[in-house]
Image (cartoon, rainbow, N blue to C red; front, side, top):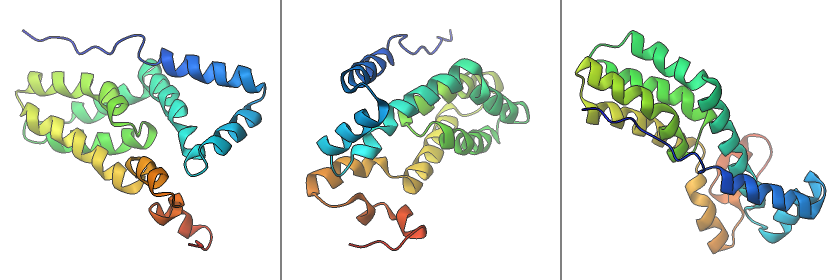
Length: 170
């Protein structure tokens, strides 16, 4: 018997409530951004991105682009190739939903039932999704944010993306 995967309906509400409270207390979005930047000097601008990613995940899940991407790959999949197609569709989806939990909430409900229906390897299919998520983590290492804050260094020391746009002064 197959059980449906569910995401708790209130999982994003706490983020939304705190975001709205912060915006109300600061009165303007730019004042809110500046307050966060002052409070978290090293990581403030990155911390602001997490609620945005939560919103993007909600839009991707609610309006259907992620399901269309995943289903497009799944329609051409065979049992042997499903893990590869899961990996490739995950690479596309992870550009829009970089959070691992949010990413799985968007893609998991499509790839696991497909693996069961095609009699493909469920562990390999799930690992295809996870491996693509980890490729994304190498390109945009959000895991480094707390380490940077604790070490008291600028994020550009670990996150080399700024080097392409301007000289990085360490």
